[in-house]
Image (cartoon, rainbow, N blue to C red; front, side, top):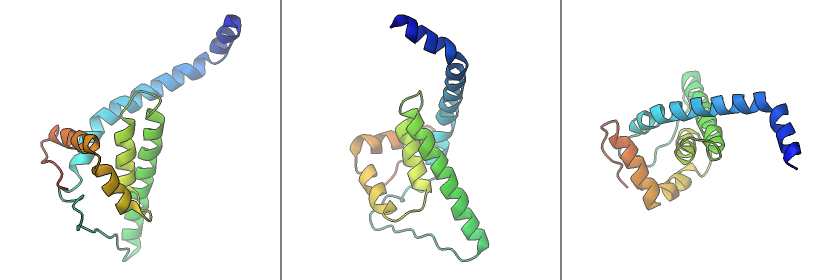
Amino acid sequence: MLDFINSLLAEYEELLVTVSIVSAVIFVISLALMPWLLGKIPVDYFVQNNQRRTEIKDFGSLLIVIVKTSIGLVLLLAGIIMLVTPGQGVISILLGLFLMEFPGKRKLEIKFINHESTFKTLNWLRSKVNHPPFNR
């Protein structure tokens, strides 16, 4: 059994090193970007009666929605990966969801922000870039 595990490690050594390096890079980038990205969200974003609707008026606004949703999808996928590798997985998933546009997004955001430990963590990260805490 131990010989089998050693042979697998030897066979996939290059892949394991690559995954480790990518994981370390994602971890460092997430540590640097998460507080900054959270600082870009308005303080009143999670207020119950604050309904923000994305209006697509022209090609430029459509392009912005596509870019934001693409970045959100990348953050969501990176967050899922960071659940099993080093990094801020849950926060990356939340930021990805905040950036994406999909039906039922508002209900999901309110549900997440009403979880006390998530709310405290997001506000703690905002304080790292000298932004005021979120309102609910």
